[in-house]
Length: 419
Image 1: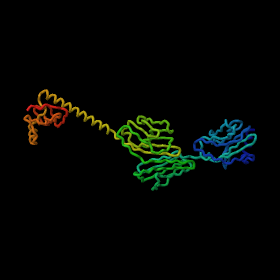
Image 2: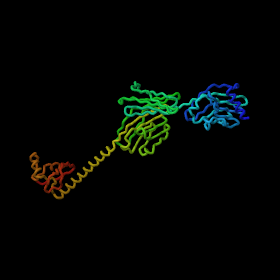
Image 3: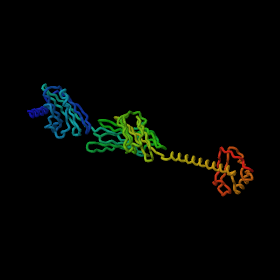
Image 4: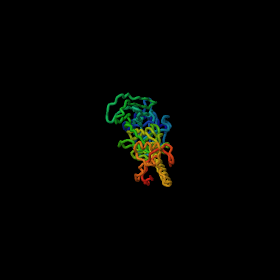
């Protein structure tokens, strides 16, 4: 009896259902390889029968059947096995919608939803359109060239370039389109860019389903003498849902999949990432020259991606060298002060001045008409509070120290040596 009733239903389909209530076509866009719901409603009643059929010129295909309060899949086409279901908990309220999983391009076409109860039957026609929407537009710069591309798209997409502020673009070749099975990829590039301008470049890829745009800002450069640096993302006020930081266009640094949510740092960069602000600003620490390179920030929302490149140059060791030099000078000054103190102390103990001259130097001083006393010492001894001491480089007699330099030592007051 059940088989007979099913055959009768098929015959009625081909006779266009004399007792139907025509509802007209409804269009549904289904995404390739995703799940899709084909809507169908009816007036509830007892002895419910539901049939879903794909209409084809070479013969209709049985998609899904439901009666006796359960699925009846004995006549289901092999292509739909394991991919269809109805909402059994809602059929009593008049919902006969079909859920189709893993949508394929062969699923595109017209479908009939047939429902029957004791009071009559109904049918509706749903036109299923399968799309491979643009998921993401990738844009990046290499030298004086900008590249734009996207893939996994259906049907064939279109690509356009624009600038802000608006300016004519020269040397724009036609986009390169490739097809892999049913899906398309598209790419294009701009050359001979003017690096001295603040122009931003946008690449837009569109299909009948959706449109997405990626904008590339002019890159900036940062020179950092320290091991910690803060790199801003973009100056745009665009509200973004996703944030991605990359290093040299390949290494993933940080991802944030929800605006204002927590961010995830890749294992390789955990020791370097100190903080990520709500606006996307990245703070790095413990840096060395190994982290020199290009840092790329991507801010993304439903239909737009903003990209900013920052070239970071870490001048490793400059600050360390300055500190080292300062410490070295300080140590030298302290050592010199200690040496002079010991010399003066020894001279006081021996009652001998530590300012002695060789005959050669004394002759030079006389030639320069600088006054010396009989002991060869200059009258500089008479200056209070300051002492000038000359340590000659030649061999001295009875010299308390040997080196070759003039030293100015403040805050000492010596007694005038006896004449």
